[in-house]
Length: 99
Image (cartoon, rainbow, N blue to C red; front, side, top):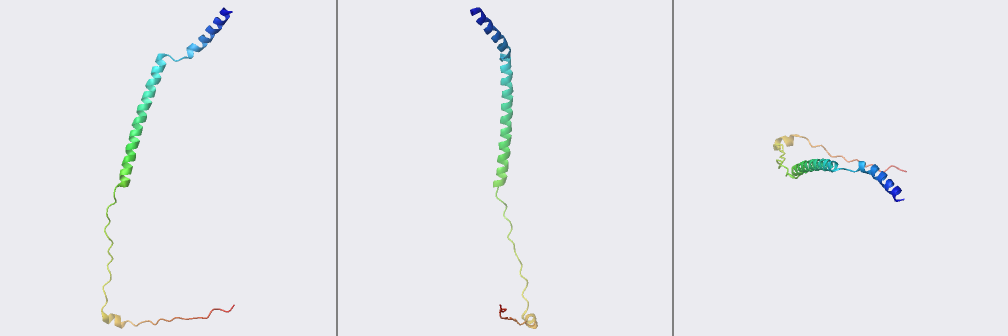
């Protein structure tokens, strides 16, 4: 009975052992993860630098605009104003329409 159990365990180990990771597999995985982490850190650094530059442009004070000056037309002499006839103001009042 012990012999059958030992044979079953050996068969089980023979099927599992080839699928386990070796030291070389773990080292290559570690190197790949390290490359990915370095790339991610560089990407984050570049992204935050771009964000800081954009925020700096957004928060920069706007240049002061020159005030708008409107020139009034020159006043007409009293003689020309007197020559123009004044128009009468006419107001027509009509009763409301019957219902």
